[in-house]
Image (tube, rainbow, N blue to C red):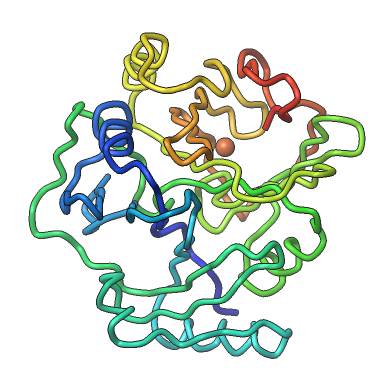
Length: 292
Ligand SMILES: [Fe+2]
C-alpha cells in the first residue's frame, strides 16, 4: 500500500514577518533563502525549503506538506482518499512550481486543516548554512513532526492510519479523558500526533530536532533571555525521550525544539502506553494547557 513517508514542509500565513525572521533565523537557526517583505522561505537541510511563511491578514498554518515516494503513490493515495469521501484537488502547474515539487494534491483533514501530498521536493544547489551553526535531524525522518488538537480523534486516526499509512507508535493518557496518539511514517518516533482534548481544536506545535544537545541548550538560554515566549520549560518526554522546550511562534502556535528523539524499527516495535507526557520538566506556562 502506498503511504506517506514523512513531513516535507509547512506553509504559514503570518501578519508579522519581521518577528518571524528573527524567530526563525536567530532562535531556530533556519536559513532564509527568499527574504522579502511578503515572503520568508526557510531552509534547514539540503532541500530548497522546509518552512514557507507568507505575509497575510491572519496567523495560521495554511498547509502541511506530506511526502510520498512518487507519482504512482500520489495517485494511489489520492484515489483512496476520494473513495473514502475526501475531496482531493489536483494542483495546478503554477501551484506545483510554487511549492518546488514534482507532483501535488491537496485536501482538508476532518478538523479542516489543509493537507498537501507531494513528491520530489527540490534539492538546493547551495549547501545549507545555519545562521546559528545548527544542524537538523531530517533525511529519512522528514523535517520533524506536527502535533494537532482535534475534536474527532477517531476520524483523524482513520485518515492517518487507514488512508495515509501511518503506524501507531504509542498512546499517552495525559489527563482523565484526554489522550494523545502518536504515529510514525518513518524511523522518526512520530511524524504526526493528535490529542483529543475537550474544547481544543487546531494546530498545536511543529517540532524541529537538532543534532546536538548543546544546540538546544544555547537556544534555551536565548529563550530565557527573552527571544520568544516560553510555552513549556526544558524537559524530557516519556514516549520519544526527546529533550526539548516549547516556545510560542509569532503566529501563536508553538514550536518544540529538541534533541535525542527515539527511533522506531517497525520490525521490532510494539506500541506502549504512558500516563504522562514527560519524565521531568516541560512545565507549562499556561497550566490549563495539556502537557503534550
Ligand atoms: Fe512534539
